[in-house]
Image (cartoon, rainbow, N blue to C red; front, top):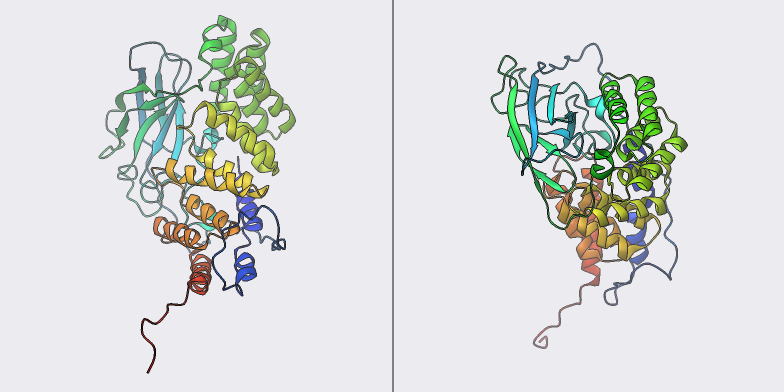
Length: 420
């Protein structure tokens, strides 16, 4: 799903930073900490400018050196030796901190894939929408999704040496497998990745409904996943429809059917499929993730808030990006207190610092609340986390305006002794 151009245009339209500061520029009598929810003159919103897209290479530019394909195999296991609840996504995480899905396990936990070859097939709402802020629009243009290794300028053998593999299953934390030193001709088996449960998680995969699926439904579901892997959308949709036809409570199959429909731009049908998945299993977290991504694309802010709220209620740990989009939705609806709370949670949850924009969004919300000092701190945190950000100059300009505003509001010191 290509959601980032819409997201950046949305942010550009909502963050009228200079206008808010200018409105308060002439006030010097004390500080202001109003919530910005009501009263005063409405802040004019500038017309958003289109987000620049990465340009294609010209014939005179050097061609990128793509990494060699490296065949990887392995197994995912539960900590207690129990069966997996269903297919588990295998992600690659590199020094850019962005998680990229590489493949998934079969029902027995086995996986195999070529590193970096499945980005277009597996890209969906589980793919991180945050990446390299050095690129136009704040997103990486590296074909491997790795801004430092596995991309341009890296040697072919060392492309993935700064990367790790992990399994992704809501409610569980995963071992990681380092790819350091791995070469194309090495033995492909990386061993076992163990999953451990996380306490206080209500959200689940479709384990309950999937385990009850009849054999024919499970067979159709597996065939659908294979068709997705082979980039055969018609066949995938047909198999997933067959699976839910045999077993209407097959939440995982409804989810995959929704993804297949969404990739073909059948949005209304995809939304119905996700709703069917949630009707079959209300604690299944992935449909909420897909629904909030659709709401973001459509700029349906209340739906964005509702679905991120539900997702975070079920699993507040696995989906840190949901806090960011929850804050963005509240900002758009001018619920500034709720927006600030979610933005703070987004900053705290982003422990890998994969999305420096959390600091930027928090600063923009604090400006709306006229919390000038806090806003300046947030923007400085953003530049520290993304020192080469494409919008560095505009953020530095905003910081200058904030510093001037803070200076105006500081009380004039009184002389301790009368002048002679």
